[in-house]
Every structure is written in structure tokens, then in C-alpha cells.
Image (cartoon, rainbow, N blue to C red; front, side):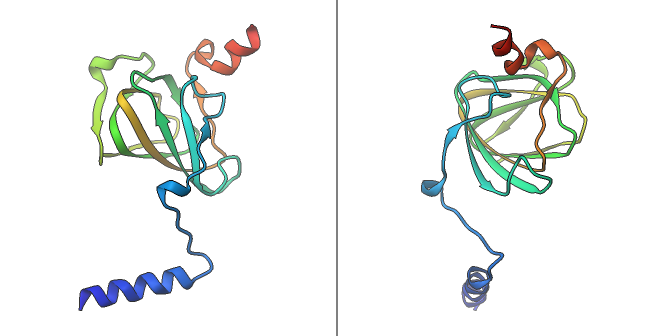
Length: 151
């Protein structure tokens, strides 16, 4: 009986114009914005990260990837899809004190909280937040867009 209810609910949602779904092969992957260190790929699943609306993105990060201490003006929800994601709090990147988030883990970082990230193995994370997306580095010298502009 439960299967019938689930199937009926899925059919109703699929018929509703506000319902949207995407499957991994349909994701449009491209380079992550320049505010991220080189090497990351990003796919927008829902919304527009540049607008004042909810959005969902996936980031595909290579082994050993690091994002220096930074903060966002809105809460950030992170789900680890694949690999191992290390999430640390504070103004200095310290792998030894970061929390290990394996595939399937979920984390939330409050607005304005200083944090950093590292990966072990190729890692894919899904990020959900309210836009417009902003990533502000604690140390402006860590901002890849500033380093590129200085060259």
C-alpha cells in the first residue's frame, strides 16, 4: 500500500509546474567561479546563485583541494555526495582540527562564521543556500581573483 502512495505522490509532484528534478547525467558541469581556487567544477541544480533566491549547486573537488578561511553572509548547508570533506572553523586552515565529513554527511555553517575546507580523494559536495552567493576570504590575499588581478 505504501508503494501506491509514494507513486501517487511522485506523479502529483511531477505534474505540478513548480516541481523540478534533475538526474546526475543532466547536470551541466563547468569550471567553478573564479572566487574558488583553480581545479573545482560546479553544476547549478536549482536557482541562480547570483540572485536573492534559494539555490543548490554541486562542487566537484579534486584530491587535496583547499579553500582558505572564509565566510558567507548567509547560512550554508553542505551535503557530501562522494569522497571525504574536511570542514574546519576559524581563521587558520588546520587539517588536524577540521571535522571529517564522509559521503552521506550533512553540515551547516551559520552566516558570517569563519570556516575552511579540504578534501581527501575526489569529493563532490552539494551546497544549498540563499543567494546572492558571496565568498569573502578572511585574508584578502587568499582570494584567487585578487591574485589573478595582481599578475
